Length: 144
Image 1: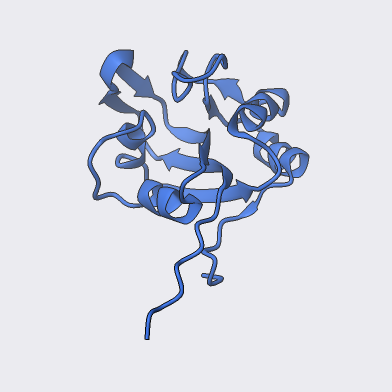
Image 2: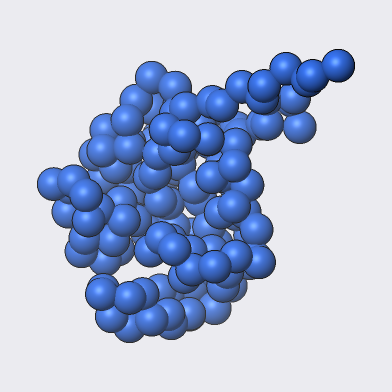
């Protein structure tokens, strides 16, 4: 008996990654970038498989494809929050308005007009961003 096709969720997300030390990565055309110890937030989207994209970001084993991949493999921890109402550029704008500090020019923003999609998280910015965006903790469609 054939199985039902798996539903592909579409949406945007906020990926928070934390470094316990300063890290340096060669990020393709962006060059060598150094991220200081602390927490960072990346605004992204996945219109062809949200669960797969976030799962990929949370994995350490992967081929380097997107700017953020070069830092997720170096992160000490990562957590994701999803939004089905906002696009990634709106989330990036909200990150800056909440008090997050732009990290690197054009990071993750090569296909839009945003200055960046990666931000350094300071103070209460994470709490304010999550409240402002309405993003919720990432759970796979099955609830895990």
